Amino acid sequence: MLQALRETIHIYHTNDVHSHFERWPKVVHYLQTVRKKHQQNREHMVLLDIGDFIDRFHPLTEASAGKANVILLNDVAYDAITIGNNEGITLSHEQLDTLYTNATFSVIVANIFYENGERPRWMKPYVMMTFGHVRVAFIGVTVPFQTFYELLGWRVADPFDTVAQLIEQLSEKVDAIVLLSHLGINDDEKMAHMFPQLTAILGGHTHHVFEHGKRVNETLLCGAGKFAEYVGCLTLSIDKNSRKVEACAYVQHTDALEDECTETKQKLNHMIEQATNALAQPIVHLPEPLHMDWFSPSPFASLLAQALNEWCESDIAMVNAGVLLASLPKGVVTKGDIHRICPHPINPCKVYLRGSELKEVILQAETEQIKQLRVRGFGFRGEVMGQMVYDGVTIEKETMSDGQAHVRRIFIHHQPIDEQKTYAVATIDMFTFGHLYPEIYRAKKQYYMPEMLRDVLAWKLKNMYQ
Image (cartoon, rainbow, N blue to C red):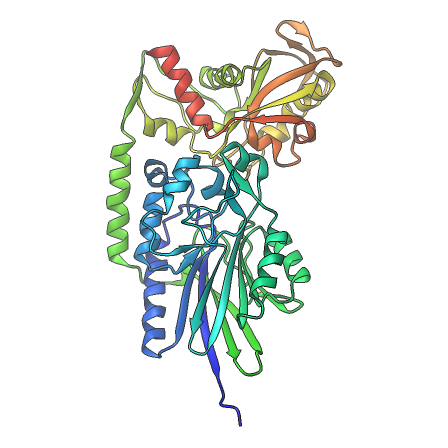
């Protein structure tokens, strides 16, 4: 008679924290508590992060290039992580290549390589863990933003091809396969349909929450939202003899937790204070204030549009005023000031539009609906879109019977717009991602990396006032 060889593994997971540390002391206390409980009961526990733990909107991440985030993960004894696009494409090549130098956890990313095709030494395609009598493989993949990775000196492979190869390699060697996927819910569901060998998919990127998981064929999909609002738990019960795996999942809402880790809270406050001091480095001295307004013409927004035009060496420039979160007062401007008013992980971009397409974009941008639009995602960390600001474009408006000002004529460098001519337009990459401006989405594009919008702004201010 076969001896019953059953193991239970408790896999805790976070995703898309995005450097939102408000709940982190509660998360840490919770993870410490469950770890202690599992240790007392001699149960197996694994702790994973599914990417976008960093976000350069936060001064702590900006000042440390993400290394402070790694310290926080080390402190809670994470076993492994994968990376998201915030780790992958908002840091320079060197910053990402050295981000995990002092990590005490495994970094599992199967579809990122150096340009020569070699895998970074700090990165593993998978990790196999043994729990008593059973073995579980953990594979990691991240969203393949190919254009951006290539500009930063990386090669990115198709995650589906990558997972197919690894499943073929690992299936006979392990009792279960768990995928750490920073691809988003649609691709996670596609993975589950394509690969029934996957026991579970721990998801991220699209900030989805599955309170008890979502079953897709043989695979259990999990997701724990964003900003540390939840901690997910996947429990696997594996029978070694039959190779039958039972999986169940739940999420812990962190706002429902009362206790927090005092030590973590104190350490965070100290680290943030150090980051603030590091960002106090002066950039320029303004002889007069730079005023900004989201819905009216302002010198600060105009300066940013001019800076974009010069940086991208374009015919014209357009940028929404909402990317500037505050005015700059007269006096010393620090690196921290620039980060505070322009925290977005957004890059400059040049697109090529025919005059007819540019006209459609401008007409759309000038609507009140777009100006008042509350934007979420695409790198935007502000509140509202605001008015579009141009360099090299003049718009003549006329108040109509509805009481609204409507675009009457558009001039490019004082000449009527030529609908047949192609214009090089400096703008920001967030307009190229969604379908807000279909003409920009479809246009030929040139991205400028690793510099962000705030780097262009600082460059312009230095040129003007130093």
